[in-house]
Image (cartoon, rainbow, N blue to C red; front, side, top):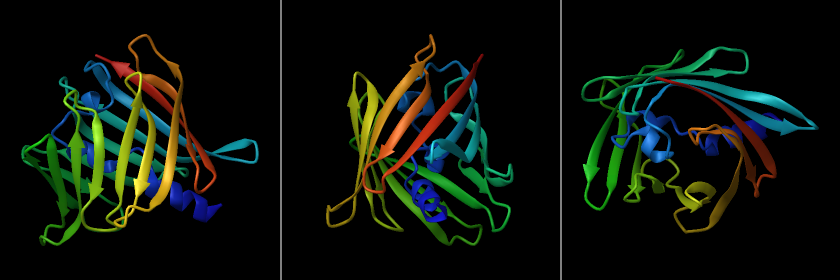
Length: 210
């Protein structure tokens, strides 16, 4: 069970770097920009029960960007907090030095997000490719595993994420199904099926609007 949880967290759909991106979180997920806070609870299915993996709490600006966030584990201990500054986003951890993440917009609807320690040691980097409506087209890891995540949409909702390695071999395919939406169109209950690792996670979202 422990190794399965590590795989899911490693391949997880909720990406920490979203808080650093210049494209707003609401545009990425086609949400209304009036979201004030969003609680996200992620569970893994195991023998007819659900085990909480993590609990994310996001606070938004009025233009739909992540102002601050906190991620908690299943013991309610802090995994990471983020805080948006003027020129960067600070990620703070309980057991290591903070990261400082900067975004550089590139041509052809791309942006490069790089995170460093205060001593300027690079820790991770990703390149995000967007469709014209702000939805994610693909994400390329540019520092650690060099995986690429390709996003597929159906009826304007994400329906599949295909993860490939540098040799273009498929590492994982995540099928996404929204089971319940609110009147604003926010997906409140989402099931993600990991076809390679035979795992199923359920994401519950609890939005609060301005």
